Length: 484
Image (cartoon, rainbow, N blue to C red; front, side, top):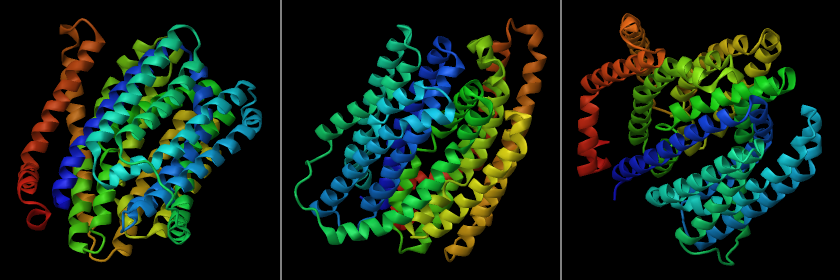
């Protein structure tokens, strides 16, 4: 099967996987929010700051290095597996012995116990990551759907059950650990042969050299992802942190469910086509076009739903509406730059990725000290401006780093869809406002507004992107060589 067909079919399966996962997690968050206060979310969120760093380090360094290996044999797999397992176990030890220090940062003794238990997810991820990476490298996204959806569904069910029993934040701990354990078990059963004894130091050196730059970039990515949570928890306390993390996760799942699954697909495609600039250009533009179609619409829907959702959560979550709206804008802008990062990694330009991450991190730190005293809303407005600047910087870096790579057409296409989404959203609000007297509740008005928004936007996208849809159909029939 050609790269084009692999990208298309794998993209469908990957989107289906992450869409189901996002819906499960959004539903779980809605139930958790009814059963526990924001402070309990804050405890789990603060522990996840540190756990997610080591999880990202495993997945985005050694796993990425293994996927990039040109020769996929038992030696490559065994070398990556034992290295990743050792990294996972070592990371768990660091989290376990550093849990008291984390508790002192937040001035809450419960953090030490929660972090010690949740850190088990890192060790489990270290063992399973190479199996999952091998499946991504082979475009076995159908199997990944069964593994990830099955483990998430089971863990969410356990977590909700424990929350109903009144164990509050321990429900989040159990859901995290059980999900990683089930994922590992199913991966061992479904994803091919177990590791052998073909560890090769020579190949390990090559992987480690690549993984070192990836680890630096991953560290900066983690810092950018969690800097806001750290500053809010440190300066403003658990309640503000819980409100922020709930709204941020809602935006991440709501917008990312159709975009995040494309990242591993396109990274594998970039790696396959790294020596063909013409195909790289086509892949880059296609990925950007897909995001331009999806991200503004989903962000607009989140903004429309923010009011009714906050009312549903109750008075304990008062103030969440502004957080949801601003985070939806932040994530929409952030996702627009996503096609560039796997492209730069696949072409070996990790220094460029590091440069962009450093700029984002420096901007977040500066904004924290300049605006956080004025509250979370002021801080998020600053983050919106920062994300716009980073988006422009990313396109400039792609244009200067990779020959024959057009970034201007990407910017024009994505900017046009943002403008359309804003205009259609405003029009749907006006239409819904005229129906206030005809409908019984604000929830009905919001639902009508979202329906109008989605219908008009989809008709616009279908009208202007019909050539792209037609090309995708031809791509599925004829492959990459003729149509990509």
